[in-house]
Length: 416
Image 1 (cartoon, rainbow, N blue to C red):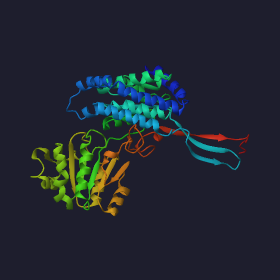
Image 2 (tube, helix red, strand yellow):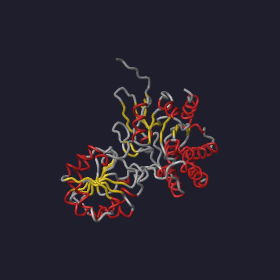
Image 3 (cartoon, one colour):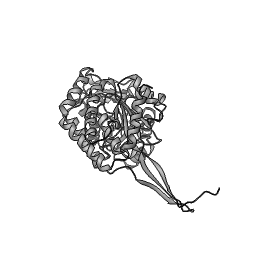
Image 4 (cartoon, rainbow, N blue to C red):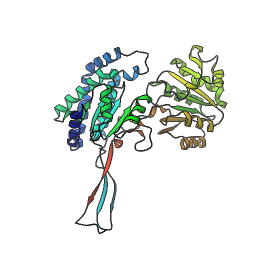
């Protein structure tokens, strides 16, 4: 492999990284956070180069964009990670055997974590902060759309690492080429786990191609069910926030499922969406309920493709159901296992929904926009895992560790 030397350096650096004290890691994270603010002009200039190459109408444009406010948020998240307890050395199980052997299970770093991501320059900083805090080296593979932004970010990180005497190989950015992706996914013995962050096409490619272990972060096809016993004022706030807070992220609302009894209230629920010029794709009953009240240029009949689509734009589908069971069937068929929500004052219905829905995060009377590591109090996140084997939901510090058994004895030998 062309990148074998690079992978070897990262693997070697990971062993030294595991020996750093938590105080040292925290000091570095604080220094990088300060450097982000101090060098915001440089970072924004690099980001402007990327933005200039992308169609501003692309759903990825908002994900690619950095602003002073977003850089401040990235720095704040990094500082928050520095204040969190170390996830390493946690004793999760212990016992003493009849023969006197003392066993304990403790959390340790994976070693080297590889992350493949698309037009998301913030991921460079998020992954670095979580990996450094959890004692992992990281190999980053950004997309060509964000290459200038990612290279500016990694240069800043390397400058801080050098100042603190840490091998810069602990945070390595690969070339933005398909060949680098292929080598990364085949880096058995060098990369301990690979995490894709992007759309369904990228995630499927990584899962189907990789020879290294993969933790799948799923695309977000997100639904919210408006139950017959919902508070309409609350529903309007939840739907607006879930759809419009930031429409390009994976926790953004894609489909509103409406109980038929609440169709007369649908115009009130959707009224805030019109202010944001959200295009609505409504099934026949919902279309009829909205006709004449929702702007006609923003209202379209739903098609089969309207459901199960991650829009990543100011677009939403609406599906009408007659029972909560129909809503659950719709989610099972079209959901991605990411985040789902119910709006209702009926506790029985809420509990049925939360117990029945198969997703990483299931909400009652709250928008899915809260599915985020920082919002959960976990610091930054490396992704939202939708798989069931291993981490699920926001993947933060604890999810960046594995464990090993430590055994102590006094000369015992096994007799059989």
